[in-house]
Image 1 (tube, rainbow, N blue to C red):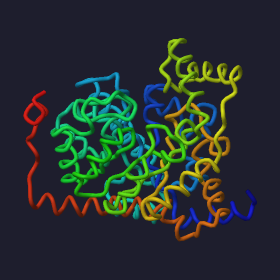
Image 2: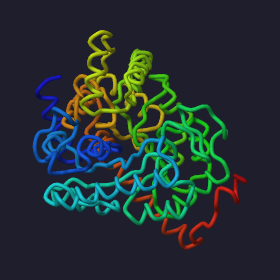
Image 3: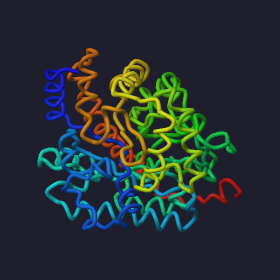
Image 4: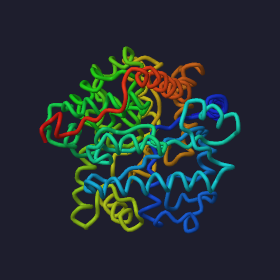
Amino acid sequence: MTPELLDRARNVLRAAPVVDGHNDLPWAMRAQAGYDLDAIDLTADQRHRLHTDFGRLRAGGVGAQFWSVFVPADLAGDDAVSATLEQVDFVRTMTERYPEQLRLALTADDLEAARAEGRIASLMGAEGGHSINSSLGTLRALYELGVRYLTLTHNSNVPWADSATDEPVHGGLTAFGEEVVREMNRLGMLVDLSHVSADTMRDALRVAEAPVVFSHSSARAVCGHPRNVPDDVLAALAGNGGVAMATFVPKFVLPEAIEWTLAADANMRAKGFHPLDTTPGAMAVQRAYETEHPRPVATAATVADHLDHMREVAGVDHIGIGGDYDGTAFTPADLEDVAGYPVLIAELLGRGWSEADLSKLTWHNAVRVLREAEAAARRLRADRGPSLATLALLDGA
């Protein structure tokens, strides 16, 4: 990594900033400060407790951020819906509070306008189908509030779709799950296939009438974690028009980190913490475990290995970046926070990636997918109205 490569990387990002597919700052703010923006000032350096603040987003060349309005899968039913609404409320409040930094973005044109204004486009994605409580009306309400993707599952199955990290019960999507995908396409909400089982991925691609996304997933051929995307699915993205956004989470990109993380997660549960907890007390437990059991460390080169493979299989028009910052306890050594994107771009420049290809990776592919989803929605809404289907009607549940 030379100063010359880093300078070139920053120049790439000035012209084509990062559209990052997934950042869990809203949940981190809920867990650490009850959403209080006076308690945690995002205009100040917050590296002692968060991966994200505005200064580091700027340093990282981030031009658009999908904020995850995530709620854990152990919240169910209306509790999950209410918590998701609170997450949405926080993102909108944050965006309104910092108009010099953020612009609420609902469309591809909004992304372009934010870039022209020198602001960061602020988008929302709901992480997990439990957030809609098997209700298409709730799905439509989230869209009206500005949510522009729904990850079909999180770490557990939902009544209509299998997760990558749960025991399969549906064999992919149920009939109602297929209707969820169709209704998302009609709305213009991106179908996010991170976290879902490979069969759910394939079913969604079969049903989809608009491009899909993987907001934060890497290549299963490079690291055999079930959260990653198999090659046959990557290859199918060209026909669908979708984008797979590589994540930075060590256990998803570094094979040696998978077993270590399973043991670290067990230690967290034994100490009374959820493995995804990143509050200071939980992180103290993680750091103590790491001291006794040194973890395998990923780097920007590890992530670049995935992007090399994803470009080869899916094509350069079908890849992007979804770091998962503030949603993971550990990050790669040289991609520690949202300021790190220039390091990854410099790594790829050193591997011979052209600036044109890198611009697709960082900006153009994501903007195109959102624009194509909007075009599909206009076409589909002309042909059909809101779906009145229910889980009971289609699945007999």
